[in-house]
Image (cartoon, rainbow, N blue to C red; front, side):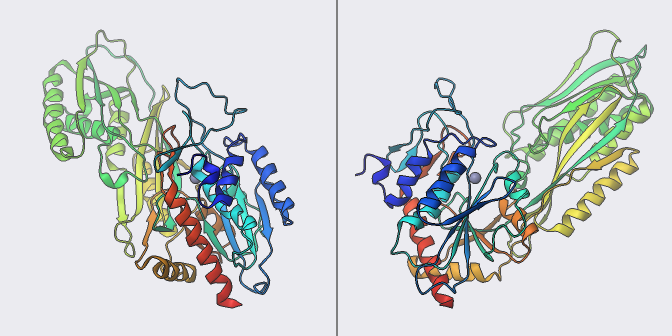
Length: 491
Ligand SMILES: [Zn+2]
């Protein structure tokens, strides 16, 4: 058994991986890695070019006799997430990653490994060292800053790649072809609500905490509790039981990131002394209902209603308070629609992710996702309509495009055929409800036919990141066969 990663199969790929692991390449600071990649390409006699965004192309000439084959773009990203365990002394701006073999895996030593996405990049480089591989013209496209904003893919120059077929090597499960991803767009709703202190009211803090949370895209189909929505639901029942004229909100905050399902939320609530029992009753009744709805999904989570001492809390008017409560209940939240072509794919969703308190206004931030552009547009319109009904202002971010699955893609058909020929069974075909660089490529290059796959990578973005050795060899073997198939199809 191999002791050093350079001895693993295929050696060309792993030798490059050992080399790139020595080069610091945290997102936005991957310049040295791009320089190194450019040098490698030139030493092998390939033309290279960069665009203003910092992306790199290494143009690999076809093997003799396959010059007329379609150009294939092999794509990965140069940057990595830099995370380490607290007890590890490691300076990501200087120190090399130290990959090591641990059973069937390659892992780093107390840090992220950067297999995401250096394995993909090195698989493309391995063609430079494999003269016996048969291929048409290749463009190895290496993007920058995938992990902290997709800015390399967003700003890729028009005309920078010439191939019409693109294989993205940044997926993380062997035997799965990814054929689509979601676009995203944020909305910020501002509800003006000046505050004043008021006498003669009973004041409480109502909070929801201990929910699971999760990624607002890839976990949204789990129907986990959203702390902002639960809080709003409790308050709406209280409005109806205690009387809308008599309930006033103070500070209201919930969630921390727009793209995370909010786990905790809290609000200051004031009612006349006679309304306290109705508030308690509503919280108990609706709380039990929410618990029943989330049983089997959430574990231990808490609703707390605690009296606050004194009367010093700044409060919004009853009318503004009611507008916020109704707004938060009416906004679309969670899964909005499933894909018809890929039945298990969430097509469109919204996450009411954050409520911030600005002192004289509440700001509600939503993260919307869809793999279908028109569906995103109508969701955004619904959010606007809801905000307007509540008398709030709404603005939207620019967003980024999705990649709509095309099950009739010729590249997918070739890849499925090659997979069947090699392994005697069908690959799994999937799309994801989160962003990928592929969506951004299709915006600049609408004629591009794309496919994404990769080896088994677990624990990505954490010091537990590891790549399953045997699946790296399998990915390489498959890529080589697919590239050869595409070269022969036209030669
Ligand atoms: Zn990646």
